[in-house]
Amino acid sequence: MTGQKMDWDKLRVFHAVAEAGSFTHAGDTLNLSQSAVSRQISALEEALAVPLFHRHARGLILTEQGEALNRTVREVFAKLAMTEALLAESKEKPAGRLKVTTTHSFGVTWLAPRLKGFLNQHPDVTVSLLLDDTDLDLAMREADVAIRMHPPRQPDLVQRHLAEIRSQIWASPDYIKAHGAPETVEELDSHKLILFGDRKPPVPDVNWLGELGRKDGTARRGALEVNSLQAMLACIRAGIGIGAVPDYLLGDGAGLVPVLPDVKKPHVDMYFVYPEELRNSKRVAVFRDFLVSSIAERNGVKT
Image (cartoon, rainbow, N blue to C red):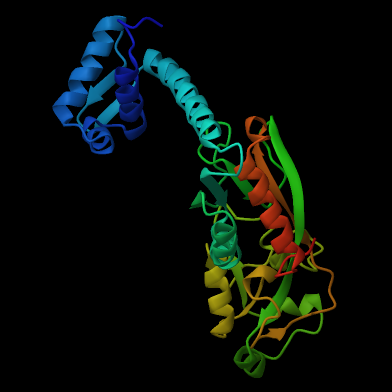
């Protein structure tokens, strides 16, 4: 890489444009004018003697050469960000920003309320909490660490089993009063079920209730489907139907009626995951220890 052809400033602008898909949005990110961004890209294309973007009315699309350059640039900047974070850590104590990702429901209901304790223990660490029901790419530094409801699918990730997450079946007293309670799994066929309705569920087998007791391999349809575990719980409380939600959402189910309590229910394994490069990071170590100790208090999850 020569200084004349590809300096860091031009690569930084190129990467921002490639990710944003337009000069305007990239300019907003970089605090540069649209014309300044455009000039930098034109200069880079001229220096490399290849087009990096197809320009059309609805935005910009990377050319084949642009795709190749952006893959490399993304990797370089990800490595730089990781190195910068590691260098920023004090030799005496953990410091710097830690980007944590997990599912929306677990992040909102279990993790977020407990972060005060972690931040009080480690005042030099700041946390960026990224809630997403899809897996962010840790290798590309979309996040530093993840709490996932399945083993990591990416290679070169360190994993630590944290807990088993259990679920229970619940209904509201009003629903039971109006419709009665099923006494067998087969009787679920005649009840209104609240199920998760999304192609990207936050946990594996999230709709196991719809398949419970079905021997023909088919699944029951929900009277209501919603792509949020918190909303499912709200609908159960409102008396719309019967639903199964993880224990961390409501603990002992205060105010709700357990349904089919003796039926064997599946569990989900929860993992703490991070890239190999962060194995010696103090921020990662203290956050892992915080999770382990918090889970040991058995607040809705079981070790």
